[in-house]
Image (cartoon, rainbow, N blue to C red; front, side):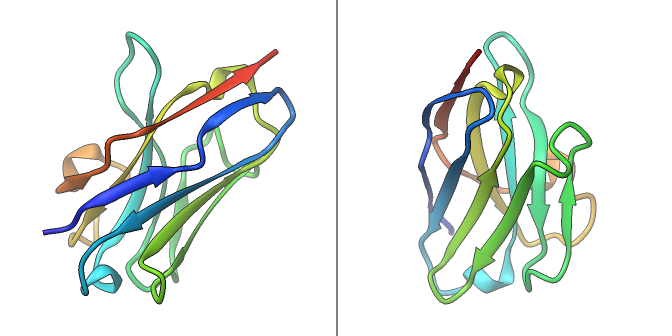
Length: 124
């Protein structure tokens, strides 16, 4: 069992930056691939970024590539999402998720554990 707690959301102007953190419980964090998803009001939850268990592979949605960076610190049981050049369309609740699977990391169906989410609002 893994429990995930996101933090770092908030209100930022367009062009600004935020760093989200997701702290995980448990001793086996380094065994899990981690993902970030986001959900805007009235819309489905969409893939943002993912990172393999070792941190050696990362994946991004086209909409955030070049602006967002996912990373992890297995010693701290934490995964991060650095978000730069934020746009109003990035406004959403951001969720982190964990999975023992190593393939299809872009699909929300691949993930077994989810955090409660943190709100990110980008004003124009």
